[in-house]
Image 1 (spheres, one colour):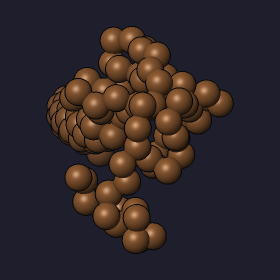
Image 2 (cartoon, helix red, strand yellow):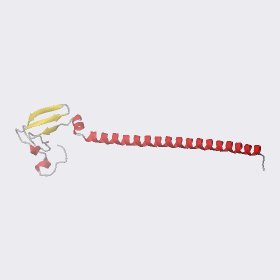
Image 3 (tube, helix red, strand yellow):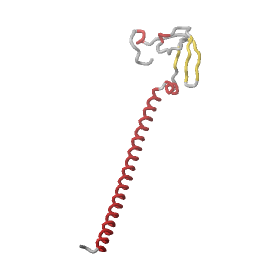
Image 4 (cartoon, one colour):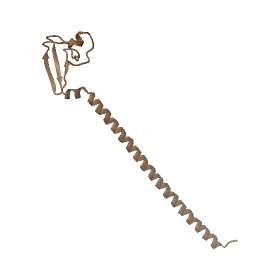
Length: 130
């Protein structure tokens, strides 16, 4: 039988090795967890940035199509007395009171004359501007 002191020394040595291995494993696990958290944070930040850019792009497209943006470019909207948008010269006639909507306000006007373009006179859809 080994001497009791020798057994105690082996137990202490084994405990020291076990403690060192445990500390190393804890350190490696901590490092792996920290790296994983960093990657998740970076991935989330990239996804969030992509989505933010997509929302900004969609907002810009919507703004470009907005009637308000059209008015800002110098166009106006003409409304008939029933508040319906006038889309064709054929919707109004001499003496019709209309409302002209600009980007900064509204003006009242009365139609003095109408002049359909050639496509409208021929009954075709007008795609070109006079």
